[in-house]
Length: 444
Ligand code: PHE
Image (cartoon, rainbow, N blue to C red; front, side, top):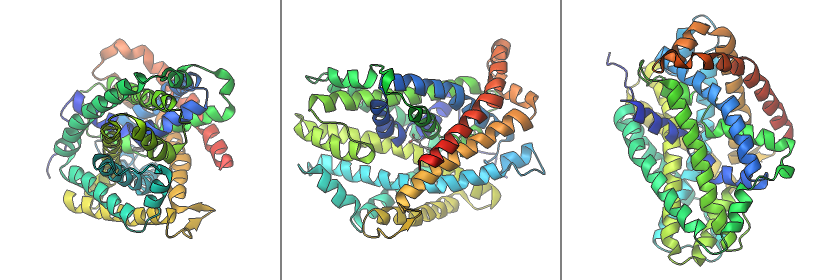
C-alpha cells in the first residue's frame, strides 16, 4: 500500500486548516451578528467561547486524528476498538454532506457575482436582481456545479499537492484582498460611525441569546464538531507541535472575522446603508454600496473573489472528510471517490437551490430544504459532535495519550497547560455545549 499522504510542514498545516476555518461563516455571518449584539462586547464574548470551548475541541480533534493517522470514522475504531465511538465519525460524514449542499450553492452565487462585477452588470435594484437569480431554475445550479468542480479539481490532487498547495496560495491572496478592502472602507468619508458600530463594546445589547450565538458561531467558524479537524489532524506529522498550530488557526480565524467586519461596516456607514442580515448583507447591501463607490466594480470583484476563495478552501475540507472515508474504508481510488462524492453533493445541492425558488414545496418541518440543511447541521450535528468528542477525550481516551499529543514539539514547557486543558474538556466544554444544544433547539 502507498504511504498515507501528509502535510509537508507547519505552514502547510496552518494554511490548510485556517483555510477550512475561514469561510462564509467569517465573512458574512460574524460581522452581522457582531453588529447586532453589541459590537465589541460580542467580539469579547466570542473570544471567550473560542478560548474556552473552541480551542479545547480543536486540540482534541487534532490529537485524535494525528494519533490514529486515519479518517474520522476509523480513528475511533483504532483508538477504542470494540466500542461505538466511531459513530462520531459517521455523524461527521452526514454533517459534511448537509453543510456542503447549501454551502456549495452559496459558493456558486459568489462566482456569478464575480462575473457581474467584472462585466459591470450589477443592476441598481440589487435586491430584485439577487432574488431573481437565486430563485431561477438553472443558473444557480449551473454555478453550483462550476464551484463544485473547482473544489473537485483540488481534492483530486491529494492532500499535499492539492489541498496544501492551493491553500498556501489562496490564503495569503485572501488576506491581501481583505486588507485592500479594509483600507478602502476605513478611508471613506463618514466611515468612523461604522467602526464604532462594530467595535465599541455595548454591553447593554448582550442578551442570553448572544452567548448562544457566540458559541454556535465558534463551532461553525472553527470547523469543529464534525470530524474535519480529525481528518486534517491525521495528515500532521508526529513531531509537529499541535498546540501551536491550533492557536494560530483559531487566532487567524478570529482575526479574519474582525477584518471582514472592518471591510464591511465602515463602508456601509459611509453610504448610509443599514446592514442587513446573512445573504442579504453580502449579495444585496454590498453590491448597492459598490455601485455608489468610485471604481466600485473593482472592489466588488475583489470582494466576491475573496468570498469565493474563503468558501472554496472550506469546501475542500468538507469534501476531504467524506473522500478520505471512501478511500480508506471502501478502498476506492481517490479520483473515483472524489467524483462520486462531488456528484452526490451536487444532487443534494440541487434540492437546496430549487427549494429557494421554483420548488418552494420542498419543505420539511416548516423549513425549506436549504434552511433545513443549514439549521440541522450547524445547530444540531456540530454541537452534538463536539459534545461527544469532549466526552471521549475527557473521559474515555487515556490521559497519557492526549498528553503526549499535546506536548510533542513544545517540550515540557507546556506541561502546566495540560491541567487547564483537561479541566476545560471534562467540565466546561460538555456543560456549555449542552446549553447551546437545548436552547438552540428551542429557539428553532
Ligand atoms: N468554518 C467554515 C466557515 O466558517 C465552515 C465549515 C464548517 C467548514 C464545518 C468545514 C466544516 O465558513
